[in-house]
Image 1 (tube, rainbow, N blue to C red):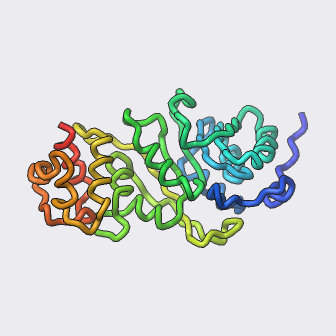
Image 2 (image 1 turned 60 degrees about the vertical axis):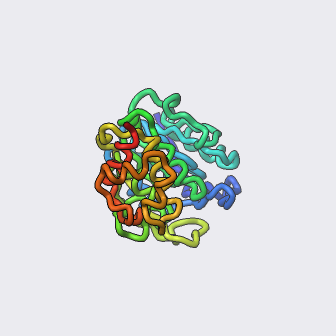
Image 3 (image 1 turned 45 degrees about the vertical axis):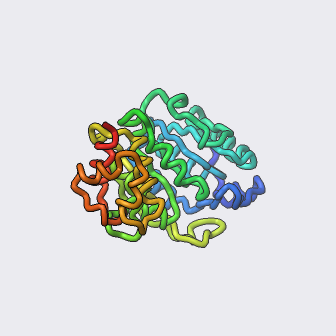
Length: 276
């Protein structure tokens, strides 16, 4: 049996299919194959693993994941990219499934019945919304084993931030209260076509045990209320939340503190009281 012909460089793929990055879809194409291979290696050995990818575009990261031995399910809204992804599917038989859909509307529980990883160069305009969706599983641990995601650097910094920093906020707490979150690598703007105005970074998250007695919906509402006006004292922010002031007293948290000074563990304590 003859070996398949080598895949063309990504720039040739883009030229062949007349692809240009669509700003409305938050697209920026990543073409550096060495960098793409490094991103695909962040979750560990993916051979025979299931991977979910959002917004593959011309298929640069998809190709790196397939070459790592993963079985990839990719969701792509942009119909212009589907022929390029079809070429990849032909090159990697039975390894790639492409779905023309909006990832925000998809129920991954209906898509995967075994554990899987999520690896994606997320479109900038929906990155945070998708992350919150995946972190808000009612059942924990989730069926996904890890998240390896590209964000604008400022969003990545918010995800991994600790209390007391200027970037610490609601996203930090929702990411860290039941996940380990770390910065896996920085990505210079020059690596993209076209180059975005901002720097980017890869964040890697893995599930950890969920603190007992905490309703995720309560924690989400609590953090939204607390950080809606982050310069206000907690007692001002939480007085309109039923049980908010009682929760502060129960957790021994000074109501004069501002939300960015309150640790993830302290927010968990507040949510635990409110969840009773």
